[in-house]
Image 1 (cartoon, rainbow, N blue to C red):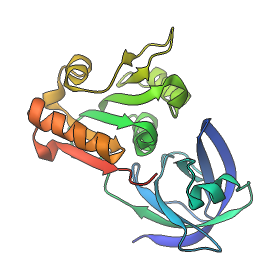
Image 2 (image 1 turned 60 degrees about the horizontal axis):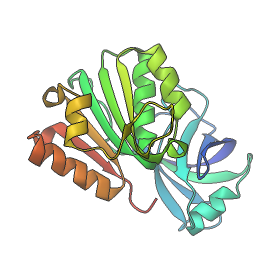
Image 3 (image 1 turned 135 degrees about the horizontal axis):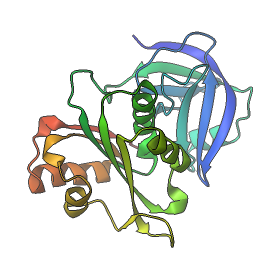
Image 4 (image 1 turned 180 degrees about the vertical axis):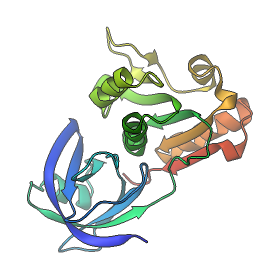
Length: 235
C-alpha cells in the first residue's frame, strides 16, 4: 500500500538546462521497486501535485529521487523555486513498470526525453545487483544537450558489460557517437538484432509511445504481451 508523508529536499541536481533531480529524505526506511513512481504535492496547496517516476534505485540508500522537466506549469514554477531544506508531501510507491524475476534476461528499453527516469532507476538497480540481464537502451532526444543522465549511463556501461546504450538524436553533435534521426523499425533492427527474443519497455511522451508500440507490433510483429509501457502525460 502506498504511504503518504512529508519529505525534506536534501539535494537538487541540475541534469540539463531544464531538467532537475530532487533528492528527498523521508525520515524513515525507503521501500520501493526500481521503475515505480510517486505523487508529489505542495504542502500548502495539496491539489497542486504531479505523478513523477522515481529516478533513484533502491540500491542508493538514504534518499529517494525524482527527476522533473521544468515547464511553465504552476507545479514546475513552484518546484523550481524550492531549495534544500524545503519539504514536499509525497505518496509512494505506485506503478508496475518494473522488472520481474521470472522475466527473460534479454531486455530492450525505448525512451525519449524525460521518459528516461524510471529506466535509469531500473538500469542502476540491475548494475548494482549484478543481475543476469542483457539490456539495450535506445534513447531519443533532440540534441546532446537534452540527454538526461548522460554521465550516469556512461559509468554504468563501463561497470556492467551487459548494458548497451545507443543515443538517437535529431541534431547530432560532432564527435559524439549517436544515430541521427528518430527511433524507427530500421534503427531497432540494426541496434537490437535479436529484438524478437526480447521484452520491450517503452517510456516517454504519449505520442512517442503510441508510435513505438505500433512499430513493434505492425512492422516487427512482436506480441503485445512482450511490450510494457509507461506514458508521461503533461510533464
